[in-house]
Length: 180
Image (cartoon, rainbow, N blue to C red; front, side):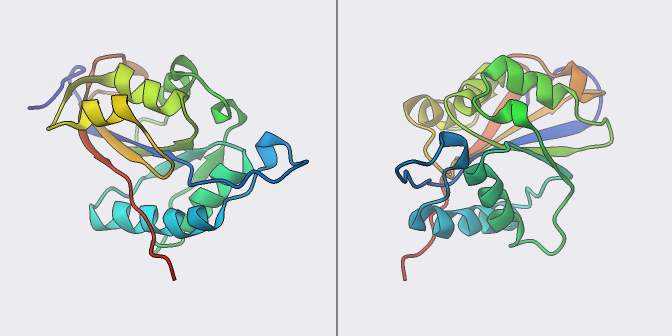
């Protein structure tokens, strides 16, 4: 089953929630670092994206420390990471704001990766998924934990054509790193 948002090439939106963060006292939310588990899980997310051939052509990442560090650790698992744009709108963004950011993607980008926060990311996935494979929608509705990855595909001439209900949710996974 495929969802069609019009004619054009197959496009893929990959959504990655930041890895587990620490909550040190006297540290502003935006500046929170990754916890030990987050430092293990972020590289596992990068390996999972590479193993599934879901590497992005472009990444847009929240400016929050935990999101930036997730991106750095995940993309370090790839030979040549794609360009990344740090966008302050992703910090605390709701689904409409995240959709606006995705719609600004250059048309030559086939796969876009958004690295950000909940509840906005889960809400975006649920808004865009007009159809889903297996139990992926139920899984996102139940919980979209730290380090979760959701993959949406759709057809469109440009990213500006992306709209709610237009995509097929093809995968949801939560990679975890090994404890040492």
